[in-house]
Amino acid sequence: MELTSEQVDIRKAAREFAEGEFRERAREFDEKEEFDLSIWKKACEYGFVGAFIKEEYGGHGLGFLEHSLISEEFWRVDPGCGQSILSCTFGSEMVQAFGSEEQKKKYLPPLVAGEAIIGFGITEADAGSDVASLKTTAAKQGDSYIINGSKMFTTNGCIAKYVLIFCITNPEAKDSHRRHSVILVETDRPGYEANKIHGKMGIRANNTAELSLNNIEVPAANLIGEEGNGFYQLMDFFNKTRNHVAAQGVGVAQGALELAIAYVKKRKAFGKTLGHLQGVQFKLAEMATRIEAARGLYWRAAYSMDKGKPDHALISMAKWFGGETGVYVTNEALQLHGGYGYISDYDVQRFYRDAKIVEIYEGSKEVEKAVIAAELLKKVF
Ligand SMILES: Cc1cc2nc3c(=O)[nH]c(=O)nc-3n(C[C@H](O)[C@H](O)[C@H](O)COP(=O)(O)OP(=O)(O)OC[C@H]3O[C@@H](n4cnc5c(N)ncnc54)[C@H](O)[C@@H]3O)c2cc1C
Image 1 (tube, rainbow, N blue to C red):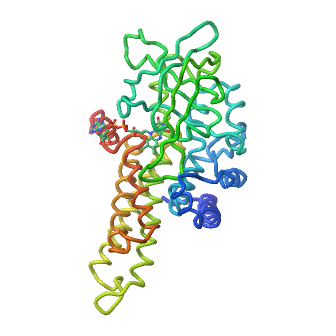
Image 2 (image 1 turned 120 degrees about the vertical axis):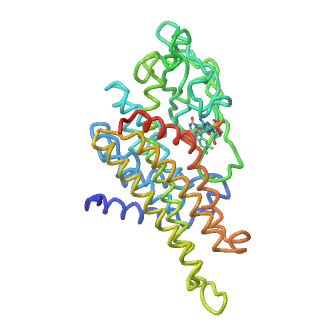
């Protein structure tokens, strides 16, 4: 599979943007646990944010592959900054797929224009991988919903203008997968409280929050999609976003490989550079091969989505293997930096810390394997 010349240009432009706009400041943002949102605004102006949002909603109407290519390039330069820019549309896939025409026209254009950030609160303290067991409720009262509950680890919870809340609207439904809905909450509504989580292992530039939702009243018109259909909408949403996460894993791995290559070319041992040692060369070869395999998976998975025939098993393979590749390659890159990697090389340490999240969020690697196996068992060979 080859990229079109337009896709090659997008990838090059994303790489140049990342190099020019945030490589030099990545350490500062990681240390301070914050990001300069003027860089996100600039990325919006350049068309990197919400590239997959259709033109009629202010976007560029590009595919999921293009968006994933941008993710890879941004994460290659710095995962925390890449995530701080591209996660600002996390949730828009749901609005675009299931929102009414009016909702799409209202909520999507500001995300592309750099005027609003969206988040999506799904996870709760006692409901992570098992999303259906959440406790947050939205009770219908006349033309409103009253939302009560809490959310854990919500990306952009403190800086978003609106957050989608995955909640229970139909507790009486016999089928436990028909009890949930997705409701958009404007964060300036009374009862919305977001507390920033400090001390994350990686992607520290990116905002992560714990949400407290106390009697928030929202118009019934803020329901996204169908009442009681939230679980199925969520599965569709993850099919789209997991491929971006797979690309994140490839990006962090590629960035770490490049750091490792630069280091072994200059560090001397046994009378020559490390790069001359066969054991070191084998490591580099294995790192690069895994990256190519992971990249091929996410390209093919994105292609299946852009053709309108999402291959669920392939998407989960890409997400699982992308995450594992990120963790494997950053570990080897740090190993090749030896004691200097452990003690003083901030960049390789940061990549090592950043990579792990790809194996955890939006479906842990075990959950991805469960999806792959379920798809396999459905097939007749
Ligand atoms: C930085 C960060 C940002 C996040 N952003 C968001 C966000 O924006 N919105 C949001 O809603 N959530 C977000 N999350 C939450 C994230 O999606 C969850 O952490 C993830 O889904 C796992 O849930 P959990 O942490 O409760 O782990 P658990 O569900 O408790 O699982 C713990 C571990 O158990 C194992 N496990 C779980 N299920 C299975 C299984 N079926 N088979 C085998 N092993 C299994 C896995 O190894 C898993 O890692 C974020 C998390 C982090 C750390």
